[in-house]
Length: 389
Image 1 (cartoon, one colour):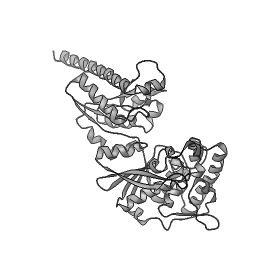
Image 2: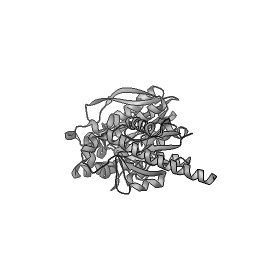
Image 3: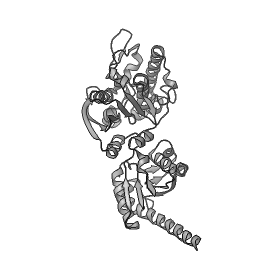
Image 4: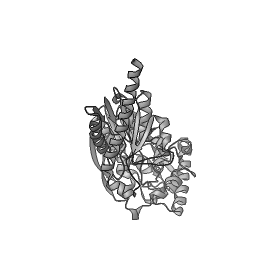
């Protein structure tokens, strides 16, 4: 019997690697001599680079780049894979955790460091670049990113802008003539699981700005700037960013990558599964175990469990889920190839207690799950014997 483990991390408690280790131990205790394999999976947000590097035996390149705040620098890594492929997480250079709580204000953040990561990949010869754009601290419309790649944003007097959120309202002209020519030889894939337009009620600012530190007054200022930015792009490049699904992702970085780099928006989980050759890993597998910290209705929208379930179902392989907790409409995931769900918690308990005991609870939950599966296998074997009689 061959089992494949493909769980998301349990944020704040267990890594994907640890879940695989515990599942392997529990499987052998219940099933004895069984074959187990595991693969790190990410939905294209946090952990995407680690998942792909682990699965494809890639390497990490570390570069010192501009951080989200003026004058800041960070050591940011990205993944390089066989075949001339690079995988970048924008959060490594421009992510919210890089900004102290007291300084969170998207008027004052930039994606410039993300552009420097792309530039470094180009300079190393990579022409197949995938960029995960979740977890940003920014609302600059991606100006900083493409500015690092040679695009100039000019105000009404012809002065070049720095590319922070506060500069959106001042954009009067965009000069893309200096864009790095190597990008024309490149395929850029944008890992994005939101469909928000650039502006409006469901756009970058009003959907994501508050979590980045924007007060209602700051949101109003940023939205006015983003609408100005949108209008300049439409006037000078003939592209309506409000008609691009995902343009509002990562504070408008989705728009810039699409307009200036010809980036193609793709589901994050689908991109990761393709990069790690997940379908090939399913060959010969009898069943798959997946999971995440909390499963609810959102799990059906481009998350790890949905992606794993859909791909396994296409090959007729059953999938079970072991999650930290279940929320509203968690069973919706069963429409996507995950046959059943179990939780790691074994009694009502405070969240912190569950986090503090996550490893022991997960292992016990895995034992319970595998025991149920063993019962099902016994029933199936008995029915098969009766049919033969």
